Length: 115
Image (cartoon, rainbow, N blue to C red; front, side, top):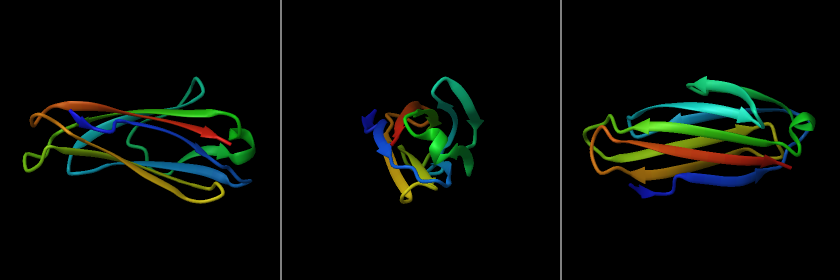
């Protein structure tokens, strides 16, 4: 494996509801678990998942684990894109990796502190 598999950042919230989408790219397969503190908010495909209002999220940590399997036999590139909206500004960040072989899996992690 080569690449950046961990995201650790902050996200400034507002009074709006915060939503998260996680996109698995490069024609590959994967699944995600999303946790706020110790509570599981979502498992599987994460699209427009409502995390809560900014006032209830501030000071808490969001953690995700996404397992991506290299399904695309034309490339060994893997990517996971995190899109968040509802805070002070939209957020988008992509983690990338390269596997050694088709069929290999990699774990991608994100920890986002709400401030």
